[in-house]
Image 1 (cartoon, rainbow, N blue to C red):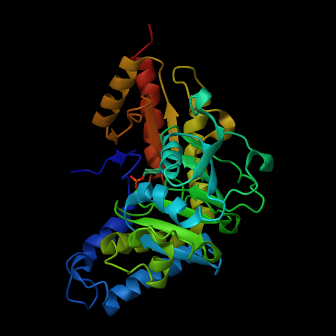
Image 2 (image 1 turned 30 degrees about the vertical axis):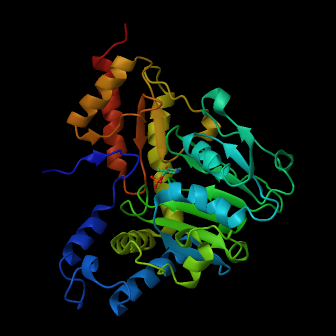
Length: 362
Ligand SMILES: *Cc1c(COP(=O)(O)O)cnc(C)c1O
């Protein structure tokens, strides 16, 4: 069967060359005589895999030496609790910017552990833009400020890094990590579930400044304690071995393509093709305000729920799958992560034109 263009928000497309490489090594990895799935995480073969995964991620993201890279489990959602347990231990306060569902979930989870307030929110505008903040928006004694850098469901993204002064900035980058260069030194902590842009589901990457760890609350579960995980090289227990191996192949792929500058160029080109089309016509509406548009998740609607449904189902038949918007917002969403080729977006735009012609609005 032919592979389709898969616009799923996550788990999502992986580069074909990565899948092929994994397939070629599936049964027997190197001279190990076994699959990566079968090998001890303490073996020399696996040690090399996890160490090169970390080294490659450090290289492509240009992660400073005073940051730890952790390969964890539990998805990004587990970090909603791990972050306050580890970081909210000075004043016991944290400020959250609410820009969509995931940041709201993170906010609600953190409220279980301390004095947590919303410093800004775009809920009133249906999360169609990134809320604006200044240094004055945040409580000066907050232990950290939390943001969601790219809002997967609404299709919005920060086009700047909020100024929080000396307060550590924590960012959920699940759906935009390694899509373009970011200045890691501007953040206290970055976390991301792997299944959008890095690997299969099951792996969560945490990048954290060293001085922020080692202050976890006594009640922090061992599995959520960054210091314990860092001291054990992410191997306090069995790590998500196979996911880390695939992440390593993805990082190699990015490195061989020219790194994150090149990814950014490609992603900008794909997103521009789709947004330029959306801006050139009036059949489809793009609800997100222009300055907050995501390069990874592009949302649009026809304005008619029945037509939206028809669009997603006919697109799927044409080999353009998973274009239905998130169940909470409806409409359409095209997730165009690193692995989505330009041709996939070309095919989508061609389909959109055809659909608009064949389905005039009443
Ligand atoms: C998908 C996603 C999550 C949830 O990730 P899980 O790994 O399923 O817990 C959180 N935040 C963002 C921005 C996401 O895109």
